[in-house]
Length: 154
Ligand code: CA2
Image (tube, helix red, strand yellow):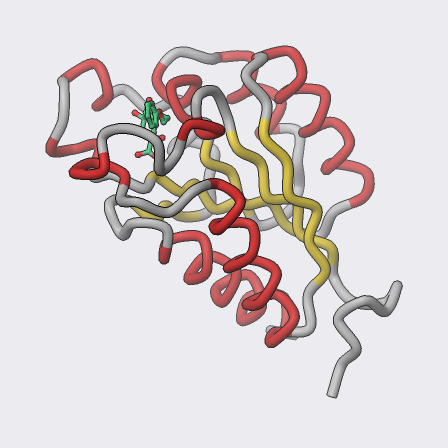
């Protein structure tokens, strides 16, 4: 069995954009009742099971999200990102992801296609390997499973 904390285990950056620190505090009909802390715990459990290391972060700042992506570009083997509202607005996040030559999965807790039309523009989906949309926080765990499967392929 692979030791999840071994330096040789693949490192996955799990990045969260603005207002996701409020998860679980409002709008449970859209986002459920789990907090971001609980999302992180889910990711840690799932990553340990899969033999992956994770670096889990949240920021409310566009520039910081870009800086995190520059770090991921150098240090990570895959990226899971919920860019939150920056999905719909940020060419800077799009460009930073474009520079990352690795599997990229975009997660949205809510189904953005069933919501306001301004959420139907998604600059991240264009550069993502795949998207998990509307699956609740399970989208994060499923994205980790997909990362493990893709990284295992020769
Ligand atoms: O469904 C998602 O995961 C989103 O990325 C959540 C974003 C939204 O802008 C995207 O369109 C879809 C919003 C982040 C969470 O915002 C909250 C605000 C108040 C209470 C709880 C969460």
